[in-house]
Length: 363
Ligand code: NAD
Ligand code: GLY
Image 1 (tube, helix red, strand yellow):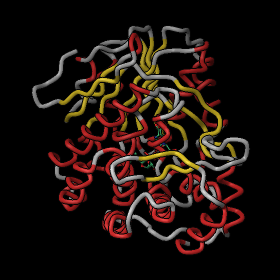
Image 2 (image 1 turned 90 degrees about the horizontal axis):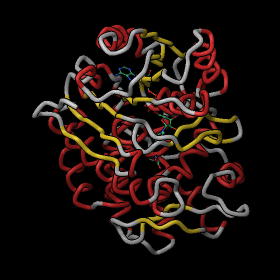
Image 3 (image 1 turned 60 degrees about the vertical axis):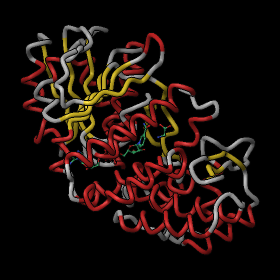
């Protein structure tokens, strides 16, 4: 691999499935310089928004490494993270008679990354894939760690597989075209790492929030690198979420209920997670893990990042019904990621009455 001195690298350490995450500028144009999976053909999977911006130059860069390079544009949006989009990838692969030496490149945000990764896991029982995340959220979270999935109308990310990419390139230049609302959504997952794992990073994010929102390149590079380091440390210890990895779901139990309850795409995933963290912090307060000052501080940070802090009024019964379907639930008992104490997260059930009280206060 050829990295520039200004590129930064984080390694996901998973034995013979280890891979690097490279963070830098101009990476898509330089992709042929990196250690790419060998193959006869490359399929770039992207969407109708990202494709016109970046797929042409990427295809050109990949042409020096693969005899055939094709581009597939999926419809854009969380509501298309489903079987239909997945089948479009299989149609494109089978329609060209693609064999196991075909490499998939996921060019886009978390939706494209999650669907493409799942397609790579399934096609001929597994073909190599590379993550090229183009949203802040995907660069700090979804492209890393090998969770792949599509949604089901009854629950988010319910159909999927653990399947690791062989390389992740976080090209910071792509963030220049990201809409403001999507930047805020990405900041939710950046903020997440502080309360669950690293209070120094929480201080840093708080101090650099204006720079991050102004897309200062150095601030973004640090936020992406530190987020990936924390995620790499967690995933390296617990790839398949038998324990520790669940802490990365802080805010997601409430957040996934908001997304499914409103209908996918109504709120952005990061918005639902931002508000879900506020609800999880309130629950942590009720359960004695944090004090009111910490809840207030984190809630203010989430609001300052441009994220909602009040949940939609779905009704407590509906929230509970949706959260019982969460993947962390056991025998119908909802298990929440709670902060206890600040800088550390635990996974625990909470009494229904207390959860209802939090929903009533936050929605
Ligand atoms: P997204 O993929 O929908 O992208 C957000 C929007 O930005 C889309 O409209 C997209 O077309 C557009 N876009 C992407 N890159 C752009 C660019 N550079 N310039 C302009 N527009 C651009 O949403 P997301 O926030 O990236 O990802 C959310 C998804 O990620 C959810 O489905 C969530 O479940 C999943 N996720 C997965 C994991 C995981 O570990 N696998 C972790 C977190 C989230
Ligand atoms: N985003 C949660 C995880 O990767 O585990």
